[in-house]
Image 1 (cartoon, helix red, strand yellow):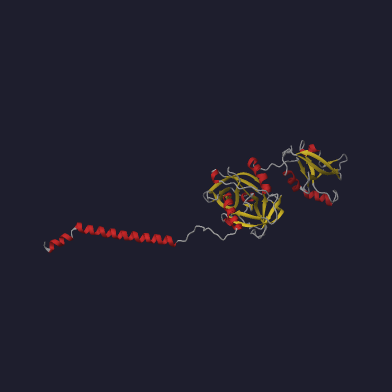
Image 2: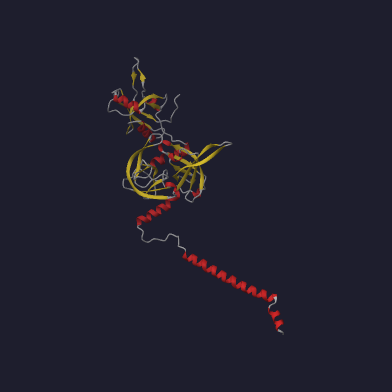
Length: 391
């Protein structure tokens, strides 16, 4: 075979194609090997973000961690927005703007959410974000502004809802450890811990009425914590975070929580009726300021206290008890009405005291009244009724 023939044999197209395929396979193999090595190396260099099992934590720390894990799924983040009419040169559009945020907690598997009234007071729309980051549009169920309470409802599946465990606030002690969970400054699922630093405090609601027996705590409560739960060391709800004592509205060492006994008493009423059902004596009283003026002008004994009856509703509990209203005698002289000084064992100093006393009862309960009439104390009794509109 001549050299020219050998050259044609080895340089034929078929031969060249076979060689190219072999080189291509080798190159691909090398590339796959290099890429695999790089991926494995990168994986090995990556830090492990899993929380390691710590062996140096105290029992108290472990318990706090466990309480947060158990309780945080019951806490929600509430966002509010306002819808305003924006007028333009050619059109008028409704614009939705964020208004604020707060916290709340899941009450039951029907989707009821409890929060502060002041959190949603001026909102046109409210959304609720659960611990699993799902967000739901909320509807209004009921309000009790005088208690800073509100109930919302979301249509989330029951399996996504973990109701909070409800405790009691009657036997709390100063010095008890407490935990607050909420969303301060929009930061989701934040835990702060402290103690009960005071009991029996009083704060003013948006209606101007006092909220009594409020819990004082040094657990950090900031804007966004409002409406969130205050828990005891067993993870039970003992209060609802509602306010901070600070002129700058930033935490300064004192926070307040509405006691859970009040929450537990009124939330079922808000769910059922939309408002709280306060038993009534069915009368109208004299303003507390005027009663104080009567005392200062010696028209009432200086040591007297209570709510004066201005008018009684016919057929009402006050009327049936025999309470006497302000009236004119036969000579045209003004006769002061009865001064209600006590309901059962609770002394009455003003209208707030009277409302608190009535709220501790239910419709149909019989109460004993101590009233001052003509500078003499007399005892009367009657059954509480639903409020009747004066005819």
